[in-house]
Image (cartoon, rainbow, N blue to C red; front, side):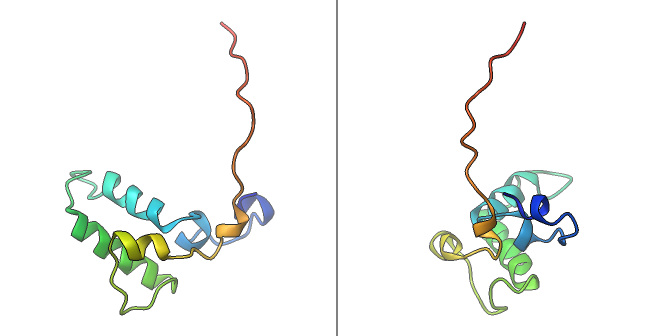
Length: 93
């Protein structure tokens, strides 16, 4: 289940919204900056990701992120997410 499915009043923060820090990186890489999505360098995306994770007290303010340290970040609500193992449904035409 998703945190919001269990508690609709749960705050919608980075720590509750994503099960993996790599997904935060991916979202920022694809969506930012608003005026030119996808134009940020990986170093800048790591910096923005680190800032947001530190602002949400998920990593220390002094942490530096790279491919290895990003994968090691454990998101607070990670265990509240479950794989979607539903079978595909037939579509009607």
